[in-house]
Image 1 (tube, helix red, strand yellow):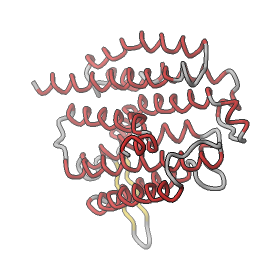
Image 2: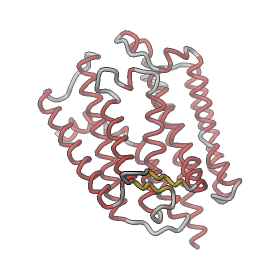
Image 3: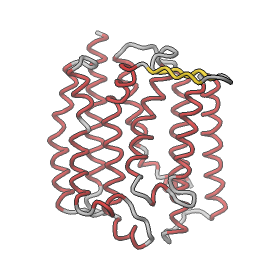
Image 4: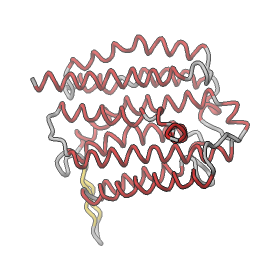
Length: 302
């Protein structure tokens, strides 16, 4: 029973949300901000359960359009989706109630994109936008929301609404910090989607699913390589401008196993054998950066 559920929601693929979360937590520890554990745990629950829900929706739709096998009856599969959406929505609304309209708007955008990624007349997953959306919503918005709820009110940005005016105040340095911190998870998350679409290109075209590799052709593999390299740019820039200590540059040494996986994938793009290279590179890049920031936090705390 549990194994069937885990297969349906693909529990083993959830590292894309977990690593972005833990990397941001490491940065919060580094800057010595007290963690609001109530809001942080509520956000983690909403984020993780909604991630499960979007995967379940994706698998449910794919069994209708791609002739894949559904592990449950359609009624049971729908009920699981509704339960996951209900729980994540309730947690998200509670988080919005305890914070402000910024979290409500950001959460609402995440919710809409997660639903329409596979569902709807023109799903995002059937367009050359999947890499962009997955990178932004897993790699950027998770760090943004986590930092927003743990930094002082208005530290990143603030929004004031009235019947006559809308006022948005953006603090440039904190926003740039969020963007730089998010480069690694954005690039590596997008790369998993890119590698998946490269490997599935012929199958996707057969079901009229025209993803980014369809338009890029063989150049898609070079984009795969470039995103792996560019993932390190954020932490390098942060170290240069003292937003992170130089010790964080040790994470760049992980480029050697990353390069080995890039070479393997460039030689052959196959779902069963080489797609795993994108997952390995995600773990290596995000793991090394997260560990480097945690070590920096420990050194600074000591």
